[in-house]
Length: 139
Image (cartoon, rainbow, N blue to C red; front, side, top):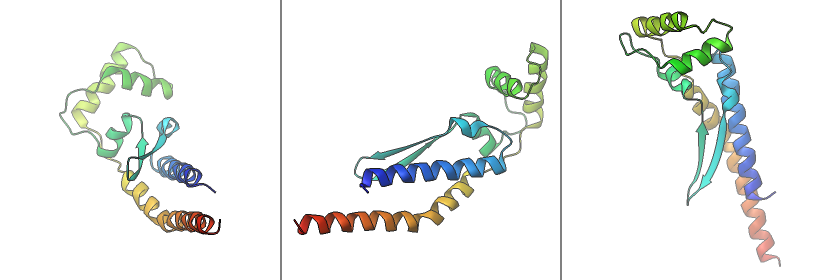
């Protein structure tokens, strides 16, 4: 297996980890817009691209903050069959501003799960590098 294929496999594994954690911790389908991008600029980096809404789930929103923007609330309401007329959306936004939203951190769990998978991924990379070295010297 090529190293690039292994990296793609890691990306898929990371997506699965994020999806499972989000499905079990967040009552939202926001994970459906999830992307994992592998970059190699000298160091291999995996970027997890999530919906902007998830930063509010992760960190919450403090009481007394400005009202949230209209459009995300409208999308959220539509996805749950809640009326999206101006007065309903205003009341939701005002309640969020007044009461805040408790944080529901999920990224720490994602990172823990990724850490648990690291030895397996390291073994796959090590095996592939060993194979490449053996193939090079046995030609």
